[in-house]
Structure formats: C-alpha cells, structure tokens
Image (cartoon, rainbow, N blue to C red; front, side, top):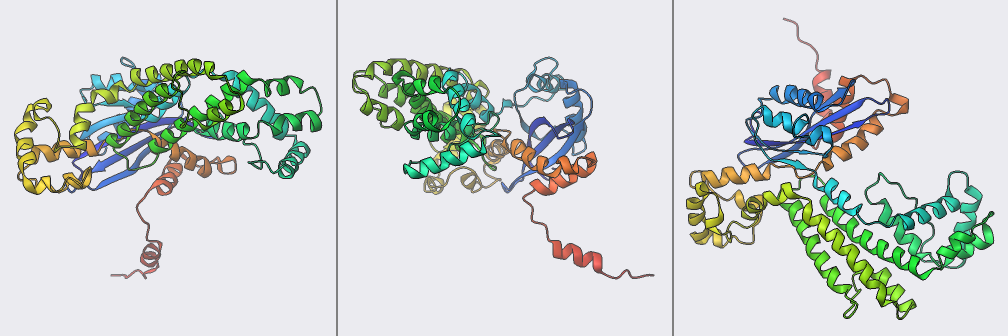
Length: 436
C-alpha cells in the first residue's frame, strides 16, 4: 500500500454464523512496473448497526492506517443503500470528506438485477415445487425411485438439480435439466408419487407453459455465461465492461432472431425444440421478443457509472486507435507521439497492461499514470463474495467462538495469493537462541 502508485477498494458486508456483521475491505494495488496485487486489507466486525456512518468510519480508520485516500482510484460496493446513499451512505460521506473518485456499483450485482426483470415466476414456482416433491428433504425413497426410473428410460440427465435463490447460476442449471426431462417427469408423477399431482402434470403438458420454460431456460443459459465471464479475480474494469457490452450486442441479435417473419432460434436450442415439436406456434415469438427488449432496456439503463467511464476505457483498451481530440487535453500531446511511433504501431498485438508496460516513463509520464490508475480499478465485488464463502468455512457452527482478530488473520491467510514458505518459518522458529 505504501509503495503502490494507485489502489482501489472493494467493499461488501455480510453476517456470519453468529449474526455478526462482517465488513470485508479488499485492496487492489499497482506499482510503477504494473505489478497488480489483490489482497484483504481488513475484516471489520460491526457488532452494532451497519449504517453508512458505521461503514465509512470503519473504512476511514483502516485506510488512514495505510497512508490515506490520496492514491485511491475507485471504490466498488454491492449497491446497498448503506453503501451507495448520496447523503448518509458510505458514498455520500466519502464525497463529503473530499475524496473524489469513481464510486461503482458492482457490475455482477447490476447484471443480476437486470435478470430479475424477466417475469417468469410461474415457471420457477412449478419447477421448484416439482423438484422438491421428487427430491425434497424427506423424500429419499421417492428420489431413489426417480433415479432408477431415469436410468431405466435412458433419460438425457440422471437427476434433477435443486434451485437455490442465493446462488448466482442455480436457476439456469436447474431449468436446463428440468426442460430436458419434461417428458419423463409427468410420467413419474402420475405413476410413482402419492397425492394429487394432476395439476402439475397438466401444466407440464401445456404448450404455452412449455414454451415459457424453454425461453427461460435459454435466456438463463446466456445470462449464466455472462455471469461466468464477470466472475474471477484479476480482471480490470475494461475486461468487465467489454463482457457487458458484448452481451448487449447479443441481445440485439436475439431480438432479430425472434422476428415472426424471419425467426432464427439457433441461439435458443430449447425454443427451437419447441418449434419443431409444435409447428405453427411461431406467433408466440413476438411475446418473447418483447421480453428480450425489456431486458435490453434494463441493460441500457443500468451500468451508468461504467458508461461514464467509457472514453477512459476505450483509451486504455486501444490507445493506438483512440480519437485524440476526444481525450483529455493533458494526454493529447503524448498520445500524438504514441500513435506516430512505428515501434508501438508494431506492438498492436499487445493489449492491456502488457502494452502499457512497454511505455518508457520518461517519455510518456502522463499516459503511464493514466494507465496505472485504470489498471488498479476493481470492477466488481466478486473477490468479497468468494471470500465470504471462505469465511463460512473458517467460522462455522463448530468454530463459532473465534475472536474478531483471529478470524481476520485466518481469513487473510485463506484469501491471499502470496505463497507461504512454511518450511522457512519452521526453520527460523527452530533456530537455537544465542545468549549474549
């Protein structure tokens, strides 16, 4: 932190097994050689309230212990009111304290909020109820019979998958299996499940309902793919923004594909199956086209904090093609030299940090400084989300009396990418003490 040129912060808060609110503060630092590190700065246990003032005071205390906010390039939060509030939230209090840097709402959380605009709860409700009816908590015998039945009929999948709301990609995987087994499930319900299941079977034979399930299965699969791309450590803001804009272009393609006159469902295999099984049902495509348009509108309305940074992202991604007149005036002269230099023109195959590392600091001080600032930015709170999973393993029901300080040290070791030389530590401790 003291040696870095810039750093950014990722903040997220969650409760542990003892209902203590734990605030994770991660720092992404970059030094003058473009070496990037993402490490846990502090785990702050909030035993009282979790208001914006509590979060700001905690972050302020921690960061001031490492030199203050002077090198801060951006802050990414989960978007909760206590974090994003303009007046009493962390963001507002940070602005009031004189810190003026981009404050981003985690791109993964925004993507998940966009996905929730698809109103297909009637599909998920039935899928969840039928799945629980077959393999719920006390349905062991029924579940074993179902596995045997699927094996007997040589079904595409050997089991259903449970749906969990809090898991990012649970819905897509659950739907994919359920749709693939849509013919076997009603047969099993009618023959092997006690109780009245006629309503479920009737729904699973209804063409309109099956079309809805097919569409939700396919669009969830595309959203899952986007979500996987957005996850992972060591991604720059530019990488995440590129994935998101690419998905918006895909939505344009999908809208064209759902045109009733020129339907092309090659990217929606479940819908294509339904069209083959039910000729003449193309009139339903207009309905799903409207759903995709609604999703596209959400993607356009959200991510405003990232859209504002688009000129900076474009310059960082492709400096050799950036329009010089559209760039900040302090960078224009150096950019003229950069784009006219044959050496750098020959390095077009290099991209991102590997390209900017080539620039000599004496010749391009301002451009290098700009690139260091951009490369230091978090774009999501993924690192916090994955660390909360680690925390739940460390502070479990069996180890719930860990002190706050011990939990922090254990979590820092559990999340770090710095290699620990255990043998060297043991050797140092084993050295005999020399008395003088």
